Image (cartoon, rainbow, N blue to C red; front, side, top):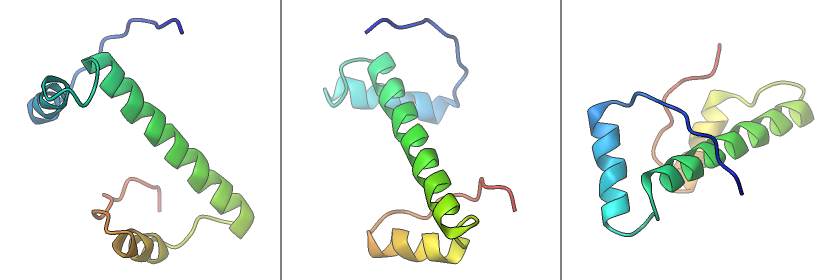
Length: 82
């Protein structure tokens, strides 16, 4: 797979955390870690769009938070438009 070089700015704590993941051997490189994180976010966004299409609108925030709690996931910051 070919890749394109881009430049991004990250908060210091996020960059430090990502570098720690790479140093621990969890990710092959910083680029691989960022690509995996972006791919996961794109898949999440697509799944939410498909859910909204099936439901005739976005799922209620409360329903999503209840599901996250049931799955043992941390609360998601509110980044969706109201």
